[in-house]
Length: 160
Image (cartoon, rainbow, N blue to C red):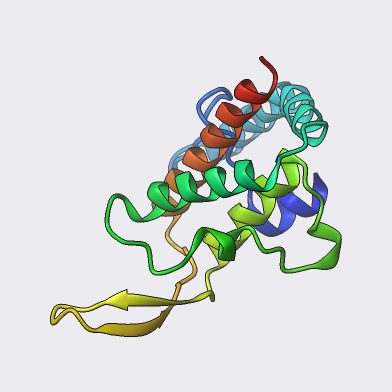
């Protein structure tokens, strides 16, 4: 959990309370209240991650999760990368087949970018491209929420 939170940021869908602190006024009090709110939700987040760690995904299920993740990122337009690329771990220790690890690998690959792909340009020709890292806060939060929601959906399907 610690490595994931530190390197990828953690946005846990709509189930957990959103904490925002405007940078004006008495922010010290708001920050302290925000920390308490996060601390209250943290055990639920740990439970969710532990449950996801116990769920093993088949290759086809990982692919479906990856396809849905690409739609969350690129919409209905053609994705410049293949689902197989975002389920490929960047580190050996991330090669586990659990829902939790699959979610982490997909999330890291989508947020960090750097994956080689192809885009169809206006004339219908194909041009090589590379996915960009997501640096904007709003885009990061939106995609992370969508990915968490997809992982929760897969969790529900697998625990029926």
